[in-house]
Amino acid sequence: MRVVTRQELQCVKPVNNCVLLHNVNKADELDIGDGKKLYLDPRWSADNQNSIINEVISVPKKLTYGERTVLKTIDLEYDKVLKEQRTETIRARQQVGMPWKTKMEVLPHDIVWVSRFEMRMCEEKGDYLLCEGEKYYIFPYYNLYLKRTPDGGVRLLNGWCLVEPLVENTTKDALARMGLEFAEPAKKPEEHYSDSMGIIRYMGDPIEWYYDEKDAGCDSMLPSIGDTIVFRWKENRRIGNDICKLWAGTEFIVTRRRNFAAILQEVLF
Picture (cartoon, rainbow, N blue to C red):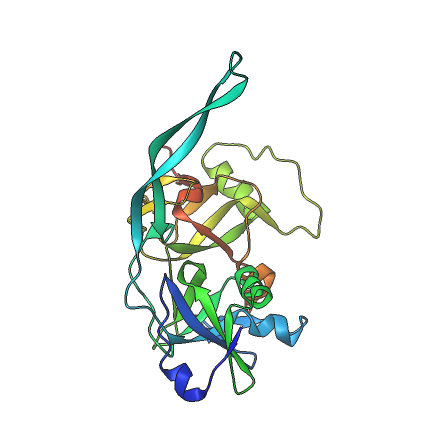
């Protein structure tokens, strides 16, 4: 944490794929069309609410992504004669910068939704500037989920997608029309959604290339908004830890194209 003046704050230019954010200090809502709104659940504390929605104060000149060659020491077979561990130094590739290649999609004064966990980490580590009693967070760009657009809609960032989980009965009906049977045991009455399938409602631009130690390659161009997809996992994370919901109570799963296992179509061929 560093205390700065207003004049110093205006001169701050983030680097290393970070943006400068300021929490929105009031509960906000986002009109996403068709009479639906993305909003903050008032049952949670004001501090938790404010950490999700932020105003972009400043952005870096560019986002960096790539690899570099480093020297890495690896262990070889233990030398029983000399009674020592033999090692060898090799050249290895190391990821630099963003975990995926994408373009800059935000500007100063944009309103963005961010990762609550990462915001909490910035708070705990002191990754913020204190100006006139207000905090301005130095926040990783890749943990921005979506932004408000000038027409009142939403734009997904960093290749994120919002998927509406399918109601269990809807899933059964869809499979029945295909001649398939829903074999999963019935859920408890209070468990409304299945995390195994969902409908894509919003999508960011495809990621050109990944290199984040989990996966490599690029996003598939096949999925489209409105497609029914099958997830790779049965449990998937909600945006904002269940804080951001549709006005009607429908939740969104925040995910990526690479987390889709299949696209479910009404016909097999």
